[in-house]
Length: 338
Image (tube, rainbow, N blue to C red; front, side):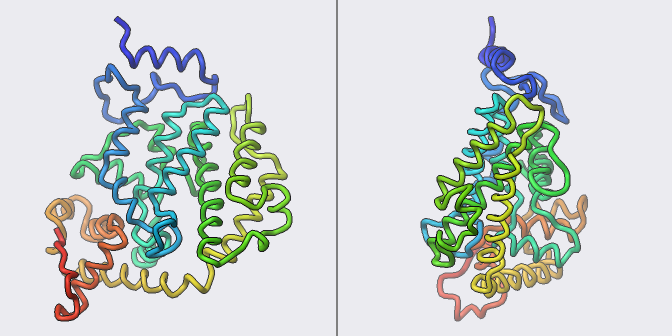
């Protein structure tokens, strides 16, 4: 009798583009017995969603540290990347499950306080990138140190969603675009909400080519990607839309990401990360038992970096208070390190 998984795999072979990744060809470093009800990529999606690292994203900064209820956090960003990327993948008849896996997992290694935390750890240890840490999380840190054993296609997409190297699947390339579309358009939306920018501030070419609302911008870029990439063994934009997207990115860096208005909070966040690192390096006994057990394998510095990178914003702030603020001033700030 044909299993549910086998039926889905046959449907993929019939419907998906010849350039799409097929579930039946998925590879894992450690082979596993196939599931009767889920393809390999569907199993990966479940593992990412059920991971502790993914759950912590709901309390990690996207752009604005300690924002209001309606601002994006790292989890909402990941969900929006998944939605945008799936729309593109569906339009190109690529594998939506693989696309969603990469999108949901691409930021699981992100630090507290967004890129401020990432840059602080890089300053401390000399080399730290959130995409590499995301791969480390799914390969080694989840499940008590055994990792999730995700397929090679998913791990490649997570690692190469940013940086100098391109993913080897088209689905990974889709997420690379989907991530940029999501953060530009939704950070623009949050920038308007924060009163930092208005739609009238947009460069003329951005407004003309992409529009002035997040919805219009996403629609323009997604549609262009689908039309420009259809029937091709690549994922690409037209020169006009690509240039407009780069203009939007330059605008966002100038007016939002590198804005003096956000600098003070980012400096404070960086200070917290630096002080936590210094203290824990000198007092590793405060680490949870599972991290103490990893020190022999990875060394103290890597173990401490893994711990700090996994903290949520509020936990990092509370731990800082616990370590450096007199107890008489804390009033209800007591937390458990472990």
